[in-house]
Image 1 (cartoon, rainbow, N blue to C red):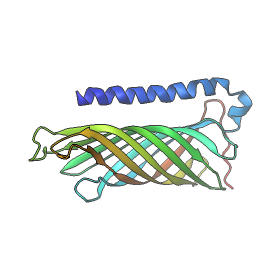
Image 2 (cartoon, helix red, strand yellow):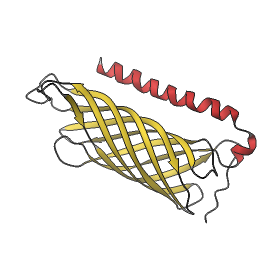
Image 3 (tube, rainbow, N blue to C red):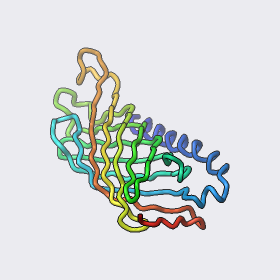
Image 4 (tube, helix red, strand yellow):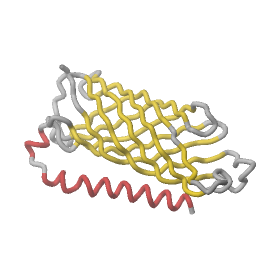
Length: 208
């Protein structure tokens, strides 16, 4: 049942992101699009502090940004991302979507974001004090940011940091005092961003 709820919530988040984008994209003129509306895809190697077990785990992060308008004072986007980290004891997955704002300074493109979604922690094996708990999932809110640095016209190097806050609800074996079971994982990612201009409206990204 947890997997079904997770899949349903993830699908809902993607639907919300699509509904947010659709009216704006339809309303944009050709001239606006030529100023640089684009999609960027990113991925990289992540080091996570899972807030369970007290050590850092290795993993990966992938995602995409849908930039609505370019050449404003800041560039607003909608971001979708997934990150995974694991070791022999647990694995943690986060599915997130939300607004992102970027400010360009020549080749440097710092940004901040506020993302919302679900966090899933899986135990292998289940804890001895709670043998039926193989997995927990719940609300995930993340705040973070980073910087992209242009290397070529369409590729940038990326450094990204996200601080997440998971609320996994009531779980007496983990929180016998009746409070919510919460985690605060943090994720540092080193990766690459690829800039994909909209079809037929290729933006000439000049290095400055």
